[in-house]
Length: 113
Image (cartoon, rainbow, N blue to C red):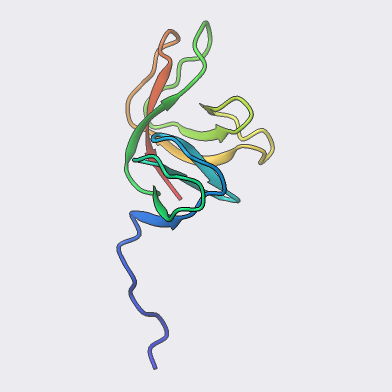
């Protein structure tokens, strides 16, 4: 009997939400973060992308720029990427692949689990 059996490449995982989820939603499952590519109806099987590059919200204004190559975390309360894990309250989202200026409302992130 093999120790491990290949299931799939793991770029997406199955997800069944208890409420409707819009396309582009960032979903936090404990320490795992995924993003919906399509809407998922409540109690229906869908998928979360756990690999790939996504533009996600960030704060804008003076002092909010994020350089390329920085580790960012998802702040569920503020619904945005931040460089601060806030003592583990924010979960690892990934690394930025493109710099975002103070005035930018989005930052480009490569998901990292």
